[in-house]
Image (cartoon, rainbow, N blue to C red; front, side, top):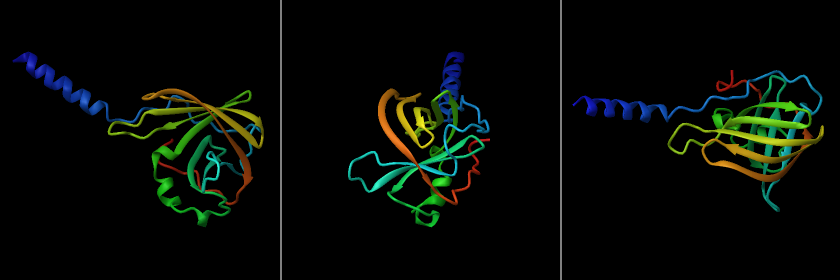
Length: 166
């Protein structure tokens, strides 16, 4: 009987502990460097002839907002779902720069469980170009890729205030 109670308690603990999002291992730190520009966004189209693009907004507080939307957006009111995007945890990351390598860390899709950590690595080619080359996901593993994003002036930017990164 004690064994059954112990097993049930253990299963209960495991069931509820696996549903929590993983904690960031990179701490939010204010960005004071000049390796990248903050007065706009980094923009890239990853699929040839695609109508969608990736937008990456880096902020001085060490936070990044990244998402996909239609290509060639030039003002905030053109984003289709910006209010919803800002409320989605998987769109937010922290970033750090060491030499010419930029590292971002945020959360992946939960797939019925807690959100895994997703860490991306990029090489800063210059202050207007980043080559992303590797992603590590604590659930699905590591893969290498090549994706270039280029800086575009964009003002005003979406606010960096969010409830996910303290």
